[in-house]
Amino acid sequence: MKAQSYKHHSRYVPLYHFIVSTILILCLAGSAWNLVKAYQHHSGRLVAAIIFGLSYSSIITLWYARSFALLAQDRAIRAEENLRHFALTGKLLDKRLRKSQIIALRFADDTEFVILAEKAATENMKADDIKKAIVNWKPDHHRI
Image (cartoon, rainbow, N blue to C red; front, side):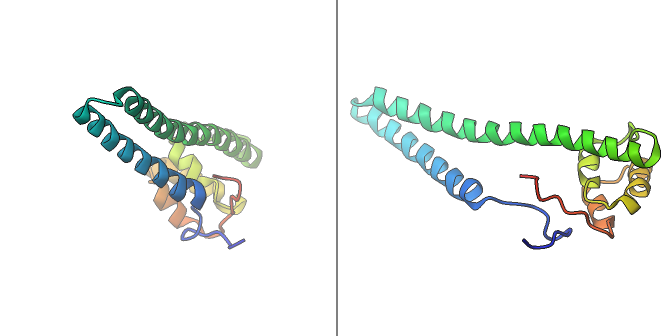
């Protein structure tokens, strides 16, 4: 597995991110075209509408399956980083930190985590800037 860094930390699952989403978008476009043709020819409208509805609902399902999983992971990351900060300092994370900042801080090694968390809260750093500021990158291979 490739070592993670700022340049190499995002993860894509090609079958999910590229293949399935492309297939579903093409199915939606084809079913929309089929629905228009069915209305023009005054036949097969019910079947065309059902296929369009299934295609559209498949895209919605794909979207929400991804977003619900990410929300659950984000919640777990916030809890883990709060615990890590508490273990290192005896205090919970600063309430000024946004979710995106906490998620970015998870890549910081313990040696720089507390200082970077303080700096992020004080300077209201963007998540991308937090990641760029990390010197000792702690990989997260479990994020999807």
